Image (cartoon, rainbow, N blue to C red; front, top):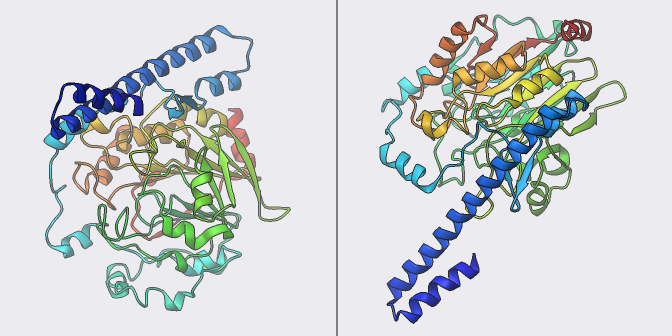
Length: 451
């Protein structure tokens, strides 16, 4: 790039141009460099895809798992990760300009905050249950919950009887019941047989800094300190709305961080080293004790990474599956467009007990379809994974696309009916509410896998 920049300046200097012309030439040179580089990477990517596809079709002697892993393994070209899927298309600068020029405004958001609170009510997590299912406690006790946040009165008035229909805490077993609490965007607190899992943590009011980035439509249902301490944190990619630097610094090495390739160095710069960097299809063991052992699997998704314009795709993006030794499992998707890899994930690791799938940020479809699923795509992933239950996340938190703010749950309901899902099989959860999911026994799972 520096050579192209110099050529542009040299040409203008010999042409005795003015300073504005110098700048225009430099910008043109850099733009031309990036356009040529992107075209070269895309041509190389397509060539790799075709080679992998041909190899998988010709080599019948290779095991099916190895063939699939080869087709859907991570791919690096020119020092950057790229999507090895035919369903992906890189966006150009002109695509972005076209979207900005034609995008809708407002997302249907009401000016009356009370109407917004009615459509997107907050619930207080079931702290008694979360603490009962955990070996660990939160940094501060429940009695101090949101004493300084100014929203406790609002939340109490919105959902005072949120758990009246639930069984008594003392009658439930963490070996038979999984809990899932959605905290906004893709941040979920999940408990599975004593394991506390936090996904794509962000507790900020805005995505980037306290003064920069899209603002939450509703307050966060609770703070990190109110939850039982997580044992593991799953980070799908490093976008600001999926990785909160304040959470990284608060938790530090007290939790084990599972991240895609290329992210460990970023964590090291924050002083965090209890990090396990994983490539697609890689498996990693995690144990609470001798009896409670879990396998964490990094699985493919179709997306991209970057926290600024200089680190685009320098790290990988990933979904994660966590499976207990008894056979129950939770799948955290992160951001993705629909791609054929999910069918392979379901074949190798399904059926999944609980899937956390994105259902928002999908309009306009021509621009978003390659990187974000709409509700119908999410239902297809649910079916590919053979998930028993799914919850739809990544909606109603930060508005970064063009659909109506209440379109995701409506479109999910329609897609569920279209594809024959049961009423409670795939839900759009309420902010902060703790949901229960019965853990399928190992014997039942093995029988279904055999069938």
